Amino acid sequence: MTDENSTDLEPTARPARAAAFVTVWVFGFVILRIFAVSGYNWDTAFAVSTTLSLNDGVSLLFGSLMAGHTFTAGLLILLLPLLVAASLWGPRAHRPVMMLLAALGLVVAAALTLSFRNWWMAPAAALVFVALALTRLLPTRNRISHGARVAVGSIGWLAPVSLLLVAALVTTPWVPRERIVTTDGTITGYVLSVDSGYLNVLTDHQQFRILLSSDIISRS
Image (cartoon, rainbow, N blue to C red; front, side, top):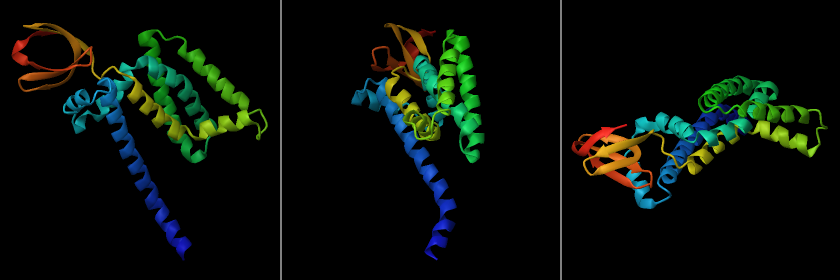
């Protein structure tokens, strides 16, 4: 009877665990991004945190990936072959999701290649995929073959952990760099938010500045 109850509760528990994981991951990503762009300075991070709202989640994620495009390219070289391998050889129930993620990864990789002329990405990722495919020819008990299977099976964890690395290591903010000419001089930095009458700016030297709109001559 206990077994039946636990079986009945399992379908409900899985979405709850997934929701809890996503919530913790999002919180961790935001905290790491705030500290990374602030040079891990507590006061600056506190000031930067006041510029964010609940609507900034998507721009924070994609802006961070775009800001750290070199780091993102390196991760794609490792993750994209794993996603393709998981969509081909992984559990059938997970293959549609892996195929969707692999397609998104290909789009991002193509955009990086065309934008920054990263022509080395495609052959590098192909080499990683060929290496994964060759491990399938090895005996099942072989350590290399076992490690490759574990990596493919753990892609659901490797991808979010890799994004946390991006959050922690990329120091460039998630918005474009601007040159702001004011009545007191020129500032280069990142406009984190625009409020009524003033701008919140993080300078190139990771200093938080509040600029009055009336003092700004131009932004480019």
